[in-house]
Image 1 (cartoon, rainbow, N blue to C red):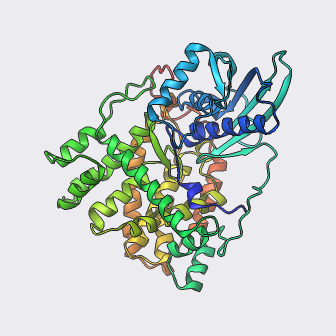
Image 2 (cartoon, rainbow, N blue to C red):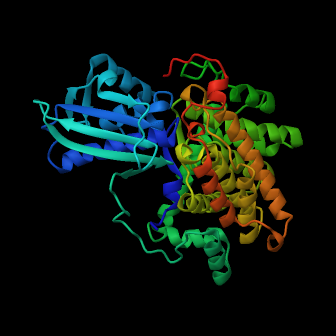
Image 3 (cartoon, helix red, strand yellow):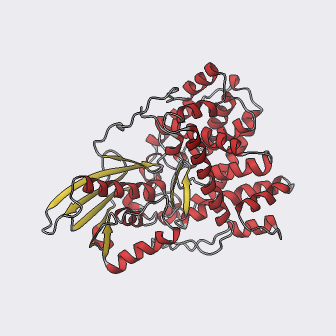
Length: 474
């Protein structure tokens, strides 16, 4: 099985969805690169995009059409100005013109060039999309089909394993293998992952990259905690994190995210206030995600608030002396656990429901927190199992196809469950556990396969149909 880096699991991108926004964005980029590689870009006068399955059913609510326009236009989701995420598509819509790859202007009307096929699902995965390029005489020049398989990962139809197969010192597909390496090397999970990451990057690059990921996470939480208003999309959901933050922090004065965190760390909050802060952190991130803000897939955009919330809990309340090394350790463990879930099951809600997003993120955060609090590798994976066990069967039923209700609040619940799972594991004896992480992953995958299609990010079941709200999708 193809090795997965922590940097594959924790990717900087734009909300609101890793599989419906970031994935199609990356697919559009790949299509443009194919045109360039085949010297077809200058010959292209028209492009057509067809969306299938879940991408069609909840595409507009998740900004799939916006992401495709940005990808075709040559924009980078990691470096793009958040304001441009909305302004560039508006310009394309107004001018009926797109700059393909940032190099060639062609006619483009989103209403005509992007088609949604609601009742058609391609065989490989529910998130399928096809790109076609035509010359001035409408002769087909090039065609590619891609699948957005969750977490911003994209595969092309017929594509097998990546050509960039990297041999790792500790190849891991299952939790039991990870524990075996920890025992063999007499070290924690984070050290095993650190050793593997050096197959891709130098130590200094790993460190800088992970701290950059953390910076995006904390900046996102900070922005979410200081932005009021109504979220886009038509549901008219009022942002809550700013009000929560104001109630919790009071009249404290600060100028930036680090001063904000420093103030929170100096205060002694009771249990209820700490619980409120956890919810505030998680909700803040996912309100930013719903607002097309810059987030980190962890492992997905829809679940992007869980890991930042638990990590902020750790540095603000559980270990006020936590350092950058502790943060790096946390992210290494979280990323590895996420990769084990991806290999053994799925991180796509369109394949597995919300258990594949919030459930996996909670399991990732639980393991990471457990190690950072001094738990053994066995206790860390025990915490991960506990967190997932209590998300099994969680459906994905977003109202109006928007990553808002119930998605934003679910991040808060996932964060709290992660912390609870870590606490249980730290007081537990893994040798007496009845369920292993590998067994719960297998169960999650079987549950995903048995789950009715309408509960897999289609807005055809659950809350999406019970709540009578007419939503003009964004």
